[in-house]
Length: 317
Image 1 (spheres, rainbow, N blue to C red):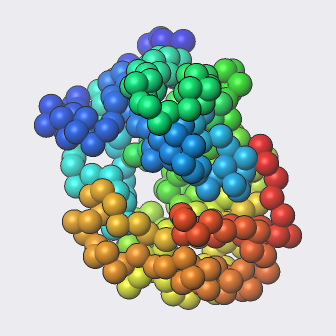
Image 2: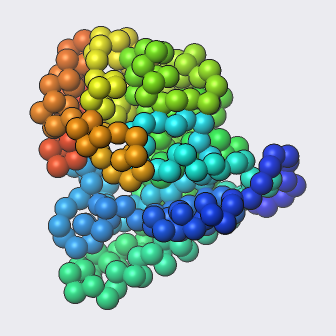
């Protein structure tokens, strides 16, 4: 699949060595020239039989067979709640890797990460072996995936390997949002209005109207859709009716409302007290559900997350 069209990007630089070192220190494995993969907490727990991601409960995903990756470390948001190092500059690469190259490199690096669990006495050997044959890929590790210009082809490459794809976008690239057809398409909506959006997400450029366009595109999508809201005390737990009006533009299959967690680099921007309790998330979720005429379908106290759907039901993948 590699051809001249992957040489068209004119901008700027490769990843600085200081950035590479920082990412590696925090568990990222770089794949190719601009992609990355990282094992998440829930894969670790699943492979040791000590827990599973809320996506397992909500959607039937198998945590120890899920890859967390990104095709680009570039992001046009600087969200307060983000556990990534959003302050570290990452520029658009001079040449984009091809989708098939990214998939091959991601799978190789993921297997390298998984192999490290083999010596643990707490590891479930059957699950460990299964983890070498992943079934799901969450394209949401870091960066904004829609900035990778060949995201539709990347999704297709994963689907060819019989893997489900979950893409999380911030909605600032509606043209790409309209093109992609993952198994489940998320838009992160972390404010009920433009003023709070500017405070919570610190976007690079004027993106609010683009997000509204992406929400309308979600309404027409033929794939399964979701809105994800990260709730941070003192920032965006307000105006449930405002959230409802925006969500109505998208008419998603699901809405996830999740507590901000005081992890990673977000600890430099927010206090531990910025985390809402699960009961606070549940209370606010019920207000959004009432304004939206949705129902609470499920919740996970351990992850402080609530799932809404139109009829209160769930469909497993």
